[in-house]
Every structure is written in C-alpha cells, then in structure tokens.
Image (cartoon, rainbow, N blue to C red; front, side, top):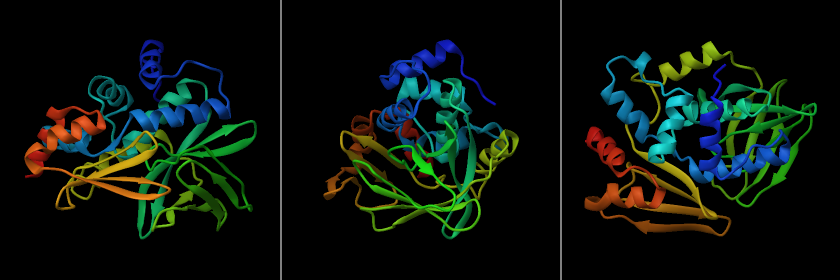
Amino acid sequence: MFVLSSALTDQILTYLGCVRRPPSVRYLNQLIQSYIRHVPWESVSRIIKRHTTAETTKCPRWPEEFWAEALSSGMGGTCFENNLAFFTLLTTLGFPGYLTINDMRPQRACHTAMLISWQKQKYLVDAAIPLYCALPVHRGKITKRATLFHHYTIRPSLEGVFEIERSHHPKRNIYTLLDDPIALDEYKAAVERDYEATGYFLDRLIIVKVIGDRLWRFSSLEKPYKLEGFDKTGKQEKPLEPEDLPYLLAEHFGMSQAKIAAALSYLK
C-alpha cells in the first residue's frame, strides 16, 4: 500500500483547504468536495508522460509524483491514477477500504473506484467521474442519494455487482461497480497497461473539473473548441479561440499553461 508522509499529507490538506480530523463520513464528504474542486480529471499529464518516457512500465505517476504535480502545477489525472492518489490520501488519514476496477458499458475493466468502510457500512467513493458524495452501498437494497449536481441510485443486480446511475445526464448509467477488492500489484499492473497503445485518452486532451457550482469540461476532439459547463439547470458553452487555447484552458482550470501546450503539441 502507498503511504504519504506526514509532511506531504499536511501540504495536500492545505492545498485542499482542509485540516486533519478523525475519520468520519462527514469528513470523508468534505474531502471529496474539496478534492473535486482542486484536482482535475485530465489527460494532459499522461499524454506528456507517455511521449517523454520510453518504457510504458515507467510511465505511471504513483501517488507521490501525482500529488507533487497537483501541488506545483494544478494537475490531476485520469481515473486509474486519480482514484489511486485520493485513495492513498484517505488511507493515510485513517480511512479503511479498497480499490475496485469496474465496467462501463460496453467496455470492461476500464474504470476504477474505491469502497471505504466506516462503522460496518460500505461507501462508494469515486473522485474521477466524479461522484459528489460518498454513496452507501447495500447488498440487496437500492440506495438513493441527492446532491447539488445529481440524484444517484445504486441498484444491485448480481451478487457483488451494482449499477451506478445518475439524474440530470443523458447517459443515466455511469458504470457497473464490481465489489471485488483489487490487490495493489494487480492495480499497478492495470495502471501500466493503461499507458500502452490500447490505453484510454492518450489520443485526446480532456479536462474535467468542478468550478463553483458547475462541472466544466473540455475535449480536444470536439470542434470548434469550447468549454462546457453543466449543472442541474442545463449546459452552458463558452467558445475558445484555437490560437489562445493553452492560455485559456490554463486560466479556466487553474493548470500549467506550459503542460497544456506540450500535450497539445504531442497530439499534433
């Protein structure tokens, strides 16, 4: 298991605007809300790492490197590294749990999440989609939770298999949760494989981050370039000029302009 040093943990909590507290569901939700507003889901970092590293086994950005880039450049990552970094912070703070690798129709083993246990109750936590709170998971019982952005439903299907659903989105089914703990070595191997030619999001620059009360998204595959902001009332769009793209994205998402420009140059 990865463990963050006390000094690095303090730096991360300061960055997130949080303080150390004993584990609780309330504290867990505070950490989630802070994390999704400071750490983006983004493919910039992994595009750069893939194009500047000869061996795919050397590409993964393990939690210490992930957090160093978050603190210095406002970076984040896609789900494998993103959820691992947040899970490592949570376990360092005393939250027990485990990582999972899940399916997104029709793709298999393509999305990660974590299950955190507290007072004999499991909670689904996913900082990458992101889910906006810790969702209680019950075997044989449908769970519903309302948040600022979505109403979530966890629907049991088979034993240890749950459908995760959301409102206010054209794609209601988010993914299929497989409640099957993944050993760290197996998880690390999956992260390494995600940098191979069959890996996800190495061919496009995508950034997703909660800013204020909106979820903002950019994708380099969608032309003309634009920012999309989502909340319960609908979608807002802001056009982006191609010649100013690195600057505009860096300003909007609070990320390194140099890294965004480098990732775009590799895609060209």
